[in-house]
Length: 225
Image 1: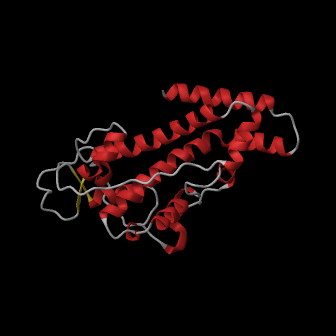
Image 2: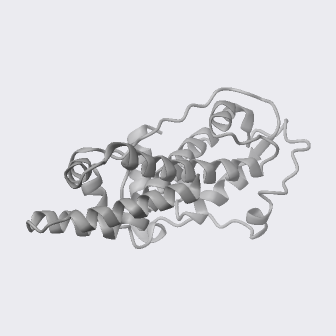
Image 3: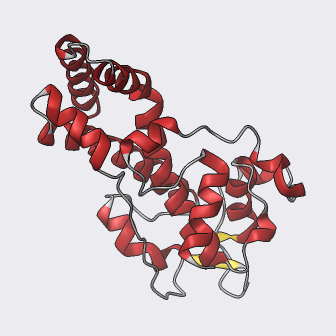
């Protein structure tokens, strides 16, 4: 599966893909129901597949071809300071990717914006960050099963039939959760940023709006630090 296909599916879930300007991001609308579009229906998984993620045993999985070695993601696990202990480590990694992306976005505004005008310029000209995740080859434990990977897709309304390999599911989920960090930024600050863009276009003094926004960004960044 090519990168543009990942972008298509992420747009399918979130309504946007990374790489658009912040102004474009604020205008994007989330898809009402990804699972109901294009006639796709998700593979139904046993309810136990969700609860097994954090308690899965890695015994006797070395001989099963439908399992993915999490050691293949060691570089990514290390970069996000997440330990590889069992199948549940993958879910922890996904949430850390999401949280770190959101936090890094907050910091980028704190670092680059110092006046109302620079805020407007950043929103109009800067693009949302994108990240490419690499996968190496490993046959070492711990492993995550195909069923467990599928459960993440089902939860986000993505058909499991879209993917032809565990590696592509992994790459998509990593990219999706990175994009979710951008979505969190949009959901928490979007209304404030849209208001200041609208006020600027109307020629209204945006000083007070700017100061309020930067206080919110700073407080949320400090809360996460």
